[in-house]
Image (tube, rainbow, N blue to C red):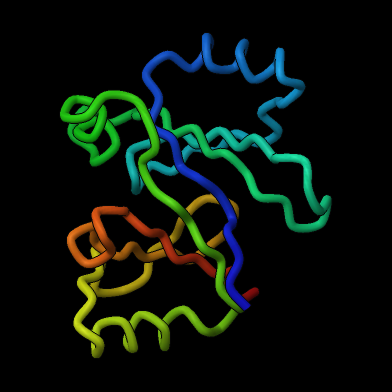
Length: 140
């Protein structure tokens, strides 16, 4: 099963965005540093299923040379990626199928992401100009 897990949004003015979404009744419920990606992530669950909410993820860069910081310099704040969660244990096979089908992935091997997830990205050049994150829960 594949479901939209979150929409990643690169931000450069987090306090103003927090204020705006709080007026809408939406609050950051989880913040997590992801040093490997050079960001601090801030997750805002959207009203839906309480067990598997779709979320907004605000990407606050911590590394001025990281990919999110570079995205902000080049394009400014805005939607950075769409993230789809796949069934646990299926990510590696899916990545291989995508490679075999001619899709370009960002990483040769899946990496650690926020929320104890394993992640990889489909390059925007292979996905209609959209950066797509694929993620699965890490095995315990």
